[in-house]
Structures are given as structure tokens and as C-alpha cells.
Image (cartoon, rainbow, N blue to C red):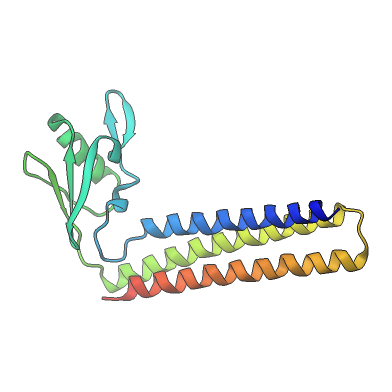
Length: 184
């Protein structure tokens, strides 16, 4: 019986960890003024007839805080990569110098910063929904077990404490991301 209770708590914790990991990945894609190779992670390039992630056909670097360089492994791919970046609708206009693409990352406007904060808030709400559904699933599993009312209440309290802890992590991550975005 104790093993089953332990298993339910562990699986709830695992689901909540996944929600946090997903949130962290989503936050990486929300740019905060500094250039980062992750900004191009959604770009897909037509490569020998199939859509391939940009990172698999080129080297992506950030020589400084406002510039991203993309060096294709095959020079004939440069125009294709340039077109893919423009079509990805990221607001970037790459310059092709024949050797590599140079992307100047423009500073964020106040309006764009507010949009990015809203996007980050939305991602953190999604993470909270994931955490709450993990709590709901754990409580449902606990009720299926043949245990006394006291043991059930104690375990539901444990699940709620776990939920509160993970919700607080989401809040902290959001506040950190918000201050990073709003910092000029």
C-alpha cells in the first residue's frame, strides 16, 4: 500500500517536472533583447527535398549581444536559409555576404516588450494548468485506493503541498523572465 502511495506522488512530481521543463524551453524561445542561437530554433530549411532544422545544416553563433551569424555547411544553401529565416516571420532580415548570413537583432520597443511579457505570462499559465492537472490525476488515483479517510487526507495534503511548491517555481520563473524582458 505504501508503495502505491509513493508511486502516485512520484508520478505527480514527474508530471509537474515536465511542466516546468516545458516552461523553461518555451521561455528560451522568447527573446529578451540579447541575440541567441535559440531564436532561430524554429527555422526549417528545405534541404534535399525535406524540411530540416536550421541547426542541422549550419553553425549558428552570436559574436556579440546584437548579432547572430549563420554559416551554412554548404554555400549553395545560403539563399535557401535566408528565405527560410524571412519566412519564419521572426522579424529578422538577414544579410548575405556570400560566406555567411549576418542577422542584426533590433532592440525591443516598449510595445514589443509588453507583447513578450504577455506571451511569457501565457506560457506560465499553461505550465500551471499542467501542474494542476497532475494534482487532479494524483488525487483521482488516491481515491481509487482502498485506504482510510485519514490516510487519504494526509496524502491529498502532500499532493497539494507539491502543487504549491511547483506553482511557486512557475511564478518565480515568470517574474525572472519578465524582469529580463523589461530590462532595457
